[in-house]
Image 1 (cartoon, rainbow, N blue to C red):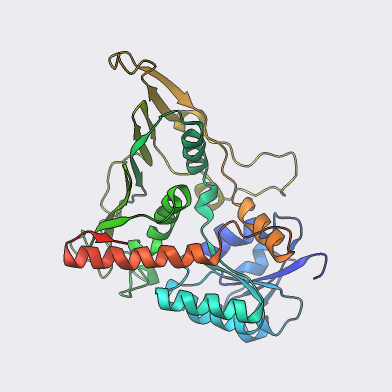
Image 2 (tube, helix red, strand yellow):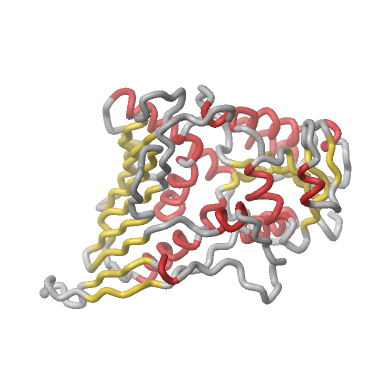
Length: 356
């Protein structure tokens, strides 16, 4: 392997422009070389040192490309990832990892046969709010956790025209758009659940996709809820945790995506420039009962949000390719999430709890 790992990104829509290009280019040891764009040159304008090619075949034919990032519409993920793996490239796949668990298993088997890595882009393990929740649980501040609610809501009461995200396809809709992130975070915290109960539905008056879901993952003594809706005009807490000794409530989404949409530049990993502390007014609130026998006496405090950093995902992928570490988000995690999303649809359609 060369000193730098050559990277090519397929697609320069929101995923390539906001989530992949900025963070790949900010990680030492990764060199962003090429983008695949069918008809425009927006990527080259944003990254003048890169080359734009018009076909995936041209990208894969380049021996300097070691890692391929699939940042295209959901329904294309499987075919493009399979093509890149067959060419002997390491692959990162934007969520969803695949359109079905069968497709996910095929990709994992192909990667193993070719001796390369395939990783789901579950970047929200590096969200600041999730990292903060993870620390609170590790510290035992709430003692025994009883319930956890994770919300990722939007307000889009009318379907947007001219976007593939509103097109009828099993790989589109909120379940396969935001569901992978929410479910992956829960599984990362607690492992695979014992049961799943779900409502996957279309709440808007007119829509071609699943635009709302509530998924309850059951663990011994714990219920973890993943919720999302496109008709949430007022914000629910991003995280709401209740434990035997207190609660934690956090509003607002991780600031990395809106910052990049607004034109922020990601500093080079290892530089002294910080990325990206959350404003104090968005920190979460911890409410604790210091003496359980006196539940009327509560102590409230703000909890500083640990800064999120999606550079960590790509730094880990770099190290895994170089054989220096294991993947933090292995392909098996992508498969497990897709299986759970499939079971959520079954649970919803049949109106029952499914025990794993």
